[in-house]
Structures are given as structure tokens and as C-alpha cells.
Image (cartoon, rainbow, N blue to C red; front, side, top):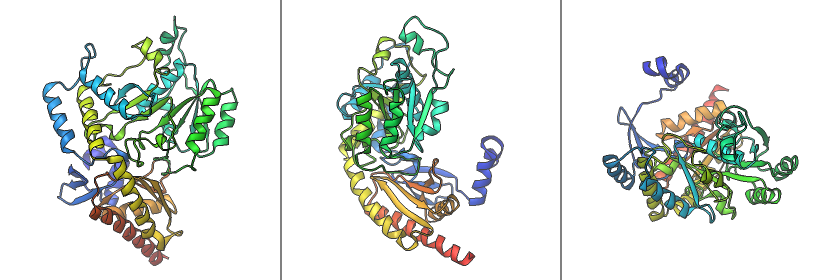
Length: 417
């Protein structure tokens, strides 16, 4: 606590002291243990743990790679990078064959923005409440510092000097997207959208929304960027949320669970046409640890495990059970303390009446040894992102904990009244 107070963040330290937040010590599978050896079921992690903590096959691959070669020189070629790119492209929608790896979601945003700028798409349309809308100003900036000799040279000078024009429209509103595209004909735009908003409050759009946005982009020549950092890799019950509606974007962003919950890895996957600027100029965009061998070993092992263990199908099955169970569990306190439960696959949200109640509800889950967290973009929503390795008993554990925490919250409020 003293370390947090002095060097990490005093507000975090005060909140932890007030809520008596434990110190985590180790993890395995679906569980986390604190320093006092108390056991918790992990439904947090922003989608980082689709396989749970420390899957044996991923750990084995990491140990082998760590003993051999962990970080690349950046000068020679990497077999691990080629293997991981081939494996990732194989599970993406047809036509998405080019891959650029990073470590964080913010890096994928920067990569997509740089490619869009190089292709003349200098206006960004994003969605209200979207995760990228919250990071866009810092993670995606553009604007040439000077005039280069060619398109590649000009694109390399767009890093951090001038903010792009960013237009934000309501999520789920197709006519609003069409109006924003119509302002300049759409050809100079890129549209960034999530199949389901994760940090924005686990907001599920109307059926056909993503398909209609894709059609609007196609008609106007706008670049379609689908952010699957939280929703991809099987979390929604399919490999990709965009695939549910038969949409193939120009660029697909992924991350979070790509490193198997063991190491940080992210990626941008796109068409050959959209990646053409990077193909012509290898120096267009790079980062120190992009495609590092240890991360690439994790990607290859993770995708093999997901395929072998039918993670998308398990997520669909478990998600339906959890959505039904949670909806029944909170029904006695709807719509007073709890507004409702929503989600898709293993991305679920419990909406409370306000952010204060959501904080108390999260604490109630912690008291019942279930880890969850409030959404960054809508703090009245508590998000649950359990791994696809949940057992039947663990599904019951989550459902019972949510029902008990909601009932305790309602009981405490009645006594206070």
C-alpha cells in the first residue's frame, strides 16, 4: 500500500484501503489467489483470459521460446513471426491476409490510422462510447510535418503532430453514419466500429447494424476498421464478431487474449490493398517489440489451443447459460437497483441504476470471491468476461454471486431508507 501511495497512485491506494482490496499473488486456470491464499473466480481481465490463466500448452511454448530466443534483433528475419502471422490470417475473414503485430490495443489504433492516412483517409468516424473514441486523441494522431518525396515518406511524418478530424456518431445509428459519410462523399474517411461495445457498457447494437455500416462504407469508398480487441478470438461465440453478420472489414484490430493471457500481443489484420503502403515502404510503421519471438510463440500456441478446444463454440454455449442465469438472478431487483443484464457470448454486463451502486455491487461480488469490474466508458455497468474454460459449477458460482450481491445491495438500501 505504501508503494502505491508513494509511486503508483494515491487515489488508487485510498480506494483500495477503503474497499479492502486484496493483493493478488498467483493464478491458474479460472482462479486467482491472494497473498492470504483466498481463492477467487476471475471474470475480469477485459477479455485477456479466454483460456484462463497460464494454459499449460501456452506456457510450454513460452518456456521453449524463452530458452531459445525471446526478443528479435529487428535486423534479421523471424520464423516465429511468419508462423504466427500465417496462423492468425488463417482464422480471419477471407481476404484479410496481411498482419502487423504490436503489444497493445493503442498500437493497433496507431497502425490503422497510419495506414488510413497513407491511403488518403484523413477523417475518422467513430462511435459514441467506443473504446477507440476514448483513446483516439492520444493513440491516433496524424498530419504531415512536411511534404515528403513520395506517399510513404509523407506518411512517415504523420506521427504525432496534427490531430485528425474526428467525428463521433451515436452507436447503433446507421443513418448517423451515412450522414457523416455524406459530408465529404465518404472517400476520405475511415469508420471505426466495435461489433459489441465493451468499455462503452457492453452495448449490443441492433441486428444488421454492422452489415449496414459496412455497406455504407463500400458505397462511399470509406475504409472500414472493425475493432475486435475485446470481442474477437471467440469471445462472442464466433471467431470474430464481424463474421456473425458476414462482414469483412478493410482492417481488423485484435489483441487482449491473443497472447493467451500470458504475454501482451496485439495485431492489425488487413487486405493486401490496404497494407500496400507498408508493403512498399517497410519503414512506414514499426515499434520496438512488434513481432517479438516470445509473443509470436504465444500467438501460435494460443490459436492452436482455441481451435483444438472449440473456444468459440464453448463461449456461445456458456454465454447463453450465463445470460439466462444472470437475468433470472437479478429479476427481483429490476428495474430499481439493477436496470438489466445484456451481452453476447462471454462478454456480459450488469447495468446498475448509477455508478455508485455499480461500485457497491462490484464490492459485493468481490466479497463472494468473483472478480469483475466497472466499464471505463459507462461506470454504471459491471462487466463480466469469464474464460471459456468455466465448469458447470463455476457458472453456478457466478450466477449465485450476482444474485446474492444484487439482493444484498437492495437490502442495504432498504435499511438505509
